[in-house]
Amino acid sequence: MLPTPRKFTVMAGAAEGPTRLNAFDNALLAAGIGNLNLLRVSSILPPNAEHIEKFEAVPGSLMPTAYGTITSEEPGTLIAAAVAVGIGRPDEYGVIMEFSGHCTQEEAARTVEQMARDAFRSRGRDIERVMVRAVEHRVQSIGCAFAAVALWY
Image (cartoon, rainbow, N blue to C red; front, side, top):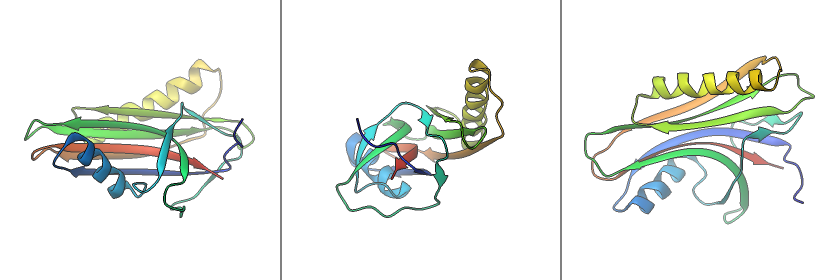
């Protein structure tokens, strides 16, 4: 078993690229996480995790990450991605929710915030605050929107 992360960073970015994969990679770079190896994880924030605005990691590091992403090859299409971190009592775990779709940044943010509130309600717990990060992108050729919560040590 891997060690439990003690810190988290919330980020989002959007970009174009010559291929779908390049658009995704460029969105990761725009979000500040492009030179790491993402390990996609499900959506639980460890108890007592500390929010850090930006992080530094050695390129190539393995980074547990919960994320939502959308890529489109339809010029003119509006795409968005968002993440929400639902936080209750500091000594209890939190919940991370991800969303992506054909909508505005504001719609994505509202949707993912409600998802976090619903996740707490499903667990019979009180939510104290919700952190949201969202991004939208109007596709020019091949575009990607990406939002994530990186969990690190």
